[in-house]
Every structure is written in C-alpha cells, then in structure tokens.
Image (cartoon, rainbow, N blue to C red; front, side, top):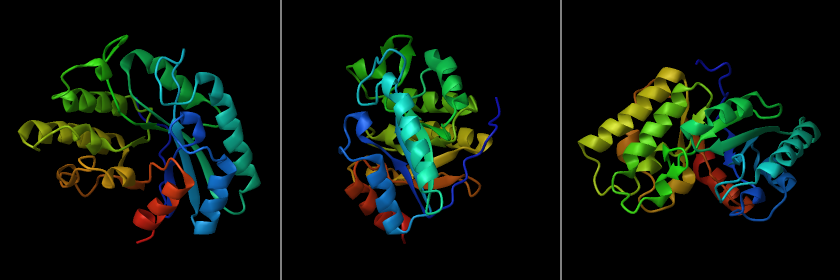
Length: 243
C-alpha cells in the first residue's frame, strides 16, 4: 500500500510533542505549548502523543476515550492560532500486526494529520508482547522487523527514534547493521522520515551514531524533540532546531 500523503517537514518546527494525556508528561495545557512555540519563533508545532489502543490494553498513553478530545483540542488551536503558527495533530504508536485495521481507521480519521511509528515493544503473536520477555538480548531484531512491517503498510509518515531499538546492544556488529539497514531501506523505499530524537541524544545508549552513519544521502531525516513538558520543548528547540 502506497502512502497517499507525505508529511511536509519544514525544519524550523517543534516536532514530536507529548501532552498530559499520556500519563507520563507534565500536566500543562495544549495551549501553553502553542503559545511557548510562538514565543520561541517556531513556524510549526507538531503534537504526536502516544496513541491509545482499543480496550486500553497498554499503559503510558492516553485512553481510547480521550482520543476525540485530543483531536478536538488541537483542531481548536489550529483555528485560533492559524495566523501565528501551524499546529498539527499526530499520533505516536507501536506497530502490532493484529491491530492493522485500527491503524487504517486512525489514518482515515478527521483531524489526524500524521501517524508515527514509535516501536517501544513488539508483538510475538496476538496478546503476547516483548515487554514480558525475560531475555531481551535480541529485542532489536523484533523491534526492527516490526518497524519494517509498519513502514511497508504505507500508513505511517515517520519512524520515531529508530536507533533506540539497539539500546540494549553492547556492540554494533553484523546482525545489528543488517537489522538497521532493513529499517533504513524500508523507510527510503516508502518515502518515510526517520527521526533523530533529541531525547535519545540526552540519554545513555539511546542514540546510536552507528545507525545514522548507515543512511544514504537520499534518506529522509527530521529532528524530533520527544518533549514531555514545555521545558523539554524549549531545551530541544535550542538544542536541535536552532543551530
């Protein structure tokens, strides 16, 4: 399936912003983020909060019942501030094959501007997930395979922190390189952005230079903040957006 819409990354934007709904972000109103973004001089702010799943089987994300309010809140801000800044409404979500129809519904949903893969865990089979694994030594293989599967659906515009899949790896050897190349090639082939994540850069073992060194010149890359507070958004803007 080919993507029908390509995300238009402009550079001077605040990409990958979370909200209080995800339950692990600062309790600050959406409008406060927008007003700070204007103050910073950004042209665009892109919210990509952690998406819910039907039935709320996973934590650290908004509940499915909160999704309409999230969309409505950002729609109102889009209209209110349209002469000052562009506001976009996105979702960050893991690709789990048993939920493929759900992703399609999200893609078609009014008010959703983009979908982003954020592969924090993967699905062994329906109802069984990698966060329950006792041995996570080879976790990167399943994470990368899931990212590739998600990219190939054509439903996603961006892959968040793809190099974070290798956070448990003690070395970046042949297997790691081949897994990384599979994600990179899928993204290049499908016109999907790979996100250099500022939050990963600030944490030990989260940002992998070895991954980014493998990218060909034609790969599409954007800078994301992964901000869970206005303070983090400000630091990220000064750290990677303004150079």
